[in-house]
Image (cartoon, rainbow, N blue to C red; front, side, top):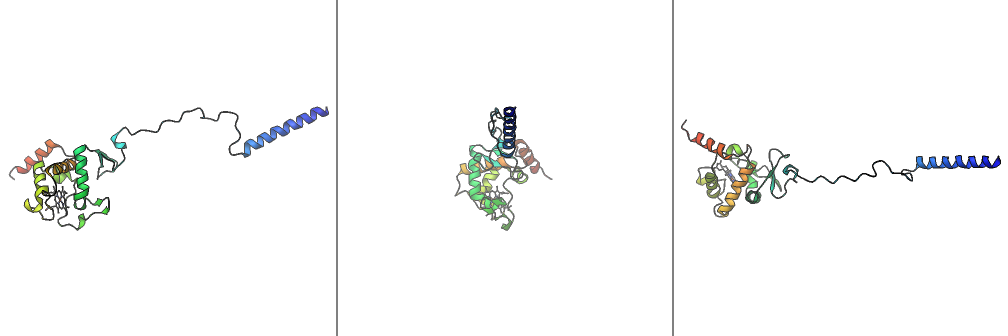
Length: 187
Ligand code: HEC
């Protein structure tokens, strides 16, 4: 009888101690599988769409009017982007990678380089002339410098390819032709 009493009290003590340990330890010593331990972690999502690309990365440009939209660029458009950020960004964009641009100090205010309302109606040829010969030669302001001596024909074509790629509203060759024809009609 005495032995049974000791046995029961030791048993109760052990169970009580185990219960106390389970409740007090932040990570109780575990002899069973915790929930979800058998699950294999899911692989990190891989970018599948161009929209998932990192903004500013090579071969893409962030839509200036909608940072959620990333525009894919081909090789020539990417070259045009590089030249734009070297030569034109100071006047034809409100922000530059180095901070605010000089655009607001220039008179007349240069059009934003993605302004489709201005550039979609201009043919590639007239854009080439405007960039190579500058504003003065095409009857515009001399504030637009001539680049015909500092950029090659190829670089100017790359710039135009970039301008077409980032245009808002989007550049579409056939509607641009319609726009030009409408302009040519006598009033
Ligand atoms: C010093 C400032 C300045 C820089 C740098 C500059 N531009 Fe301009 N750009 C202007 C101004 C000002 C106008 C507007 C001229 C006007 O409407 O009279 C203009 C107009 C234009 C036009 C429209 C011309 C037309 O006939 O309507 C194009 C195209 C253009 N720029 C392209 C470029 C490109 C490409 C670069 C870089 C290679 C560049 N610009 C660099 C100031 C600048």
